[in-house]
Length: 332
Ligand code: UD1
Image (cartoon, rainbow, N blue to C red; front, side, top):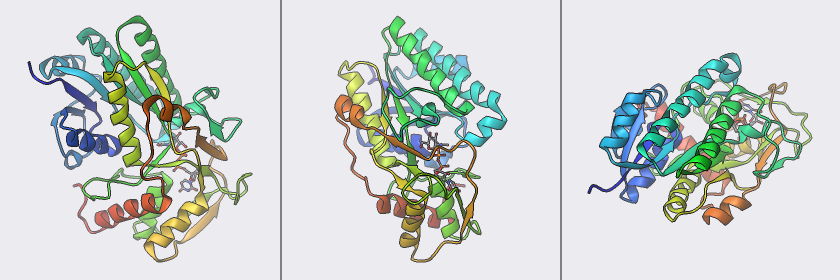
């Protein structure tokens, strides 16, 4: 019988494409389901691409069967937080309803392993800067709620069937593969590292600091920036865990320490060798002062360790990619 395959939804996106690259290095059989709404075909370095939606029940069921899939990694999602506030049903439709559809297809096909891209947005504005997985869950936008609802569906489905899952709560993912063939190409980006690198290469006139009066080390927001390769590696060890009959779990993905907006912008200036045009603005509504992962559980449960916990390395890789895009050498 054919080797079992892994279905990667959203494998043409920023994080999915980095995971696909690692899976290919491990000689896995990969099938990618992506509607290319925000992903790029050129980001796919391995596997078979099938263009389509996770909400397409017939297509998903056929893929699971035809490719002999036993594991699903589910990245496909809308991820722009402010947009989730102005258009919540778009987020519940894709991130929740389509995930439910995917899970139903998985249940029918007897899929045993599921790895889900969740988010630190499930914590909302926590009382403490450092979040453990037991920190109360109070998402403050539809993006966070739509992801949390999928966590709950997984929990309940796993209790009722043989499915086992790992949900990874991503903190602030940044950087790209230093080999330079894939990176973050999201149009109209809002994430700080991407925006700052775009400003560094002249794609934007300036970068704003949203709030300088937070109760943090320098008054600006503090986040736990995790290199996308360390995050991608977490998926690989989550897969090993499930294959070794490990139990379902929900795990934070971050380093356990944070950098302020100013520290991140300093790192971009260092990498670029030139000052940025920085504008100080009012706080962005809904932003917590600090959000840092307690990483103890993922270390214990998956034996995950970070290899790229270095702000300069994260920022340099992001800037290199942005320079490539500026030269017109990115995805088309
Ligand atoms: C991101 C994630 C969210 C996750 C969170 C974890 C996405 C879409 N969002 O949101 O799911 O819960 O990380 O911490 O993946 N900032 C500026 N100027 C800018 C942009 C941002 O000063 O132009 C500041 C923000 O106020 C914040 C920090 O930079 O303090 C990071 O913001 P951003 O990169 O937008 O990520 P989060 O909002 O933290």
